[in-house]
Figure 1 (cartoon, rainbow, N blue to C red):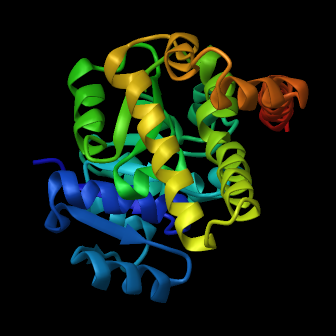
Figure 2: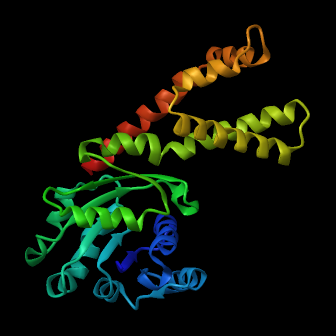
Length: 271
């Protein structure tokens, strides 16, 4: 059974730790955080271990998830150098947005240059097991390590192995996407309130409708356009609503949101 450490217990680190505890069991999970009390609170909730510091976390685990801000990654890896050089082989998984595998390897000490490296980009929905994550691996990473990381993430939602060159594009759609969906969901509920529904029910109806529509796409494999057509009766209320969405630029706004996020992602990767 793989032992897993999470260095950094912010929003994403905490979400991934929850998923790992569901997949490999809390007894295999170790948490480390700059503010140890934060790791202690999360560990108490999940029933997993708290490492005294980052080095102890590395020593205890086989797979280390680096859930720190991109600008902190170099200093964290410098701190971990003695453990990475002296201990049994480890696998590092970076969750730092915009930091390429080549850059990540440049932060490693000379004696740890052969450590298998992977990049992971999850979205926040991994916390409830409904996430969409992208995983890419450095060349020559042994397949068993890639599969082990997939297994650790198996209770986080869907995980797709992609080329690193697609990581910024993935992030623009799936990583940023929940923040694009929530305003739409809220707007649907606002519309429901405008036509007389109580706020609580309007929000529930809107959320379940989005959940069900997304599941229809994934489970049936049908094109969203075909599924849309199946709901629209000739001269009916649904096609009138679809026409209002088109008139007010829903598609254009969604496409522009992804493009804006992509441009920002590529800029962040150059910093």
